[in-house]
Image 1 (tube, helix red, strand yellow):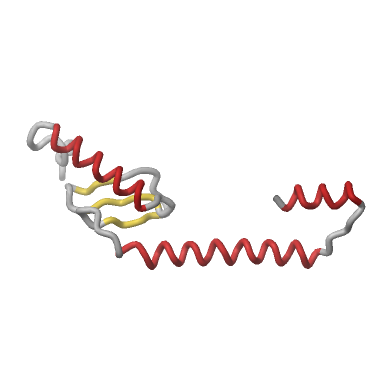
Image 2 (cartoon, rainbow, N blue to C red):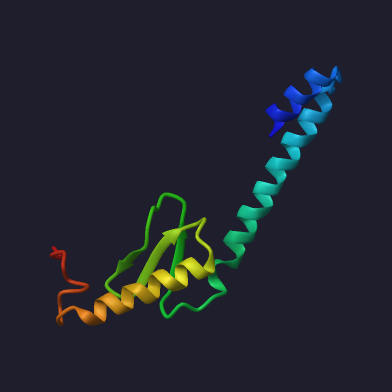
Length: 106
């Protein structure tokens, strides 16, 4: 977006001072920080049928023995709700003992 603004300013003959770019980048960084803080604070508020932990280094839903789950931090509450619902649907369709204990525990 900033590169488009720079290209438009050079074609129109306008010069944009470096302070404007610095302010735009600072505003973007502040917005991202506020969003991440909001997501961290709001993680424990919803009830999805099991405790949900939001993780940065996570690509998909991971369920630990039907007791808790880990999801990516950028997922919305609706995505989490649908993923947990799909997990329960698939877990209840499988024969007893094969859903959570597919991996051997040592």
